[in-house]
Image (cartoon, rainbow, N blue to C red; front, side, top):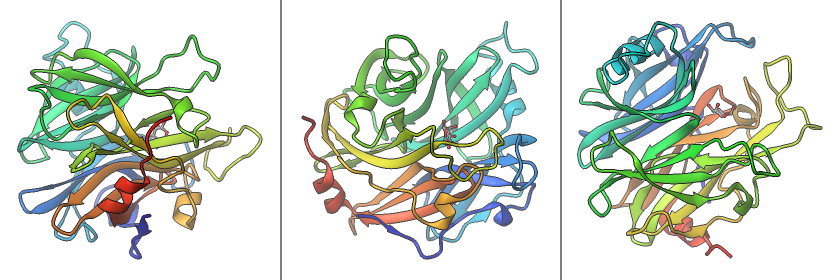
Length: 334
Ligand code: BMA
């Protein structure tokens, strides 16, 4: 279904002109004639955790394969705290934001918008910021905790901005980490509501744990083509990883098709993974056996779909396929 690019990994720590260790989970868009990538960089000692910190970097490319990395990271927790302070003036002391990570980018009707996760003193939140140059950001909103993996649709639907998100409900479930995908809407990107469930982890055959939105959806003739990640956990099977306590989760890429007018309706879902960790760079690293897509580009003229994903939480890889094959692989939900 998808072919891995022979140049994989397309970006890794040695490509960065600043201190970088694991370079992964990257939002990617095409904007103003070039590819733009915003990626996560956990920096510290190679092969060892905990890391010293995490920041967010920028890379650009002419062909989507060879990338040039901006000389400095564009965001870190201190810049996020300073940027969010005007929204929450009473609670935003130093140290309130512990870490920011897992960026996704959408260009919504020509306006570049960044979503990322923020670990705060009061829980994990999803943040939305706007930018013109991908270097300077104006912060628009932060969700209530716990929520992350936010992705924005690239256009308003029924006059409203729409996002997919992944709350972390913990009660009322047999599988404690079987977190679902939800959707919410906004007229101004600040106030979000009209929350609707979209897909449960129990509906995905290759998940016994959580699922989440992966990259922002792309419009196709058949519906919104929307990658997801899906997790299986097997505590008896230790996977490759740098953490002493071990790593036991496999992350797959999956795919669903959402109704164009009513995107909370799943009209198709791949019953088997779109990508399974197989190559050395997917199986081995900080957290082995992880495929975590955050960016997808659809070229309507050729039908090519490029999927960018974090591999083993260590590098960034690319796999491509044809839109017709991807649409055909999504089967109606039972
Ligand atoms: C998720 C997030 C991602 C990460 C993945 C696999 O919960 O933390 O950033 O890529 O786990 O470790």
